View 1 (cartoon, rainbow, N blue to C red):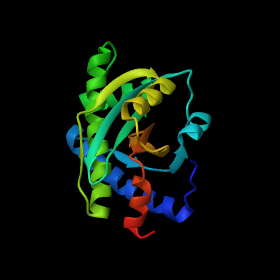
View 2: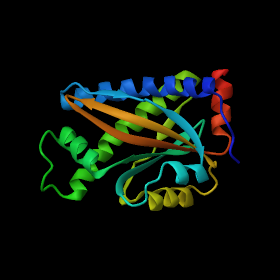
View 3: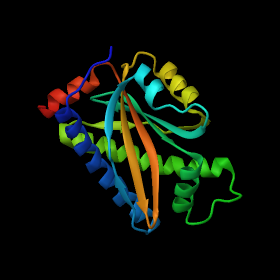
Length: 199
């Protein structure tokens, strides 16, 4: 099923996600003692098939962090970023150059940042909809994106064919680091969200 959502619905979601991004930036800034901004320039809802056609570049390995969430809604958040962006974000989190640092240490730093981002987005959604959502401990991987998203769907089994794709821009000094957050919802979650928002 490839359900179409209106611009008004997507603008409402983008506003919620920008609130979450602002909360995440504040938390990260306090942790690293440096000014970090985070913006959400776009939010899309794609079918699983369209995700492969339009988003996935399967010739590049990526860092991926998967966090499930439970509560009034259930689903998972998949945070994906390039190796170069992971290096810069890990260096920011660790307060040092990551050259020579093991992939495990780098993954741990990025996982900590992802946990902040995921929880900030879920708090924004929860506050707006007056619900509670709780995340699990994140699981990290480094693989081709096609393999990552396929593994996530196999693990989650009966989740919706619609995926919310949230672009993230981290702004730090002169750097702009791009990442993507994929919300994989349980069946019917997105429609219930829109209904709760009154859109």
